[in-house]
Image 1 (tube, rainbow, N blue to C red):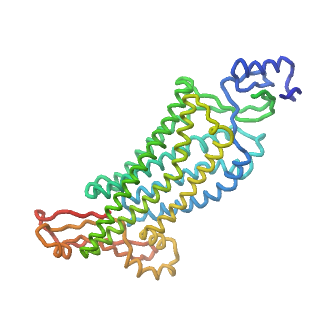
Image 2: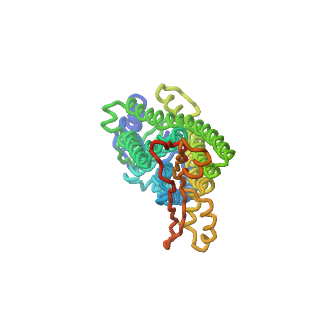
Length: 457
């Protein structure tokens, strides 16, 4: 405890006694030594919790990581926006890339300003707008973007599972239009559920000598935060328990459980589809087997993406669940004290961000249509010319194809004459765009005798 008088302030023994009384008897958060005022409804707000660690992570590692995140997700969004790439699955993947991009870009202005430009070393220059910039860049908006990404991943897995198990129904239920509508609903609900975090505190500035726990005088210029009228009206415990439990249950635990279940179901569906492909090969229906193989590759790619998403998000789900339980029921847990929570969240956030560029690599490695479209869009023409033969030979557009058969005809005849085939004829136009021209060949059928028995998605 400082015994010398705060410089620039009137000082007496009564000031010291008043400060002690403020903290011990009135439950004050700090005492203003210059204005002789006890603050019970406002707190000094820290803009950093571990300056040394956060300076390294946010100031040096984060900007480099964000560069790769921006490049990867912009490329994914551009490729999947091409006309021939528009399928329900690709629409979800594109919106996931945009949501992931927002997760990284929203905090960047604050982290670059405060840590990279080292304004954290000049807190004597702090202004009120710093407080609000920190609030919305680091606390209020990023969880909303992450919530959108979380449920879009569930939408992706659910849409793919329906496509595998109920192929005929999925053509209408999981259309690109319905997927876009579901994305809008997810975004609106996420915004509404995240809105309370924007109305929990109001901010002001404090500049002077403050008597703070455990009992010392500090000369500080800092943001001060106080509860808004809405929080005081509803009650602090009610407001924050509602917000955090809604976030933990509806946007972390529930989607994580759904993703685990859907991932298991997808893996089972892939195994069933693999057996179907083997049966088609034995029946010498190579063309249909190839389309089934393309569908299996797409499903496997999505299983990998969902699995990676789960691996990096499950630890955060467990941590947030523990935090809510301990705060709600007043349980003391040393694991949630000290440097561990800060270090854990920093490491987990960086790990989540690192998976976004990895997704781009997965698309390139596991999707021939994505890979070939990317080459057509971004590689020089001279390097694309040798690809034409390979493209014409093996490119698939991941669009649904339907085999129609006449129940009164032999399997051999049905396969030869009544199979609807998408012949994708990719061509390079003058503006170097990669175009697919789907040609559907099928003789006319009598409505009384035809039936749909195989759909590949």
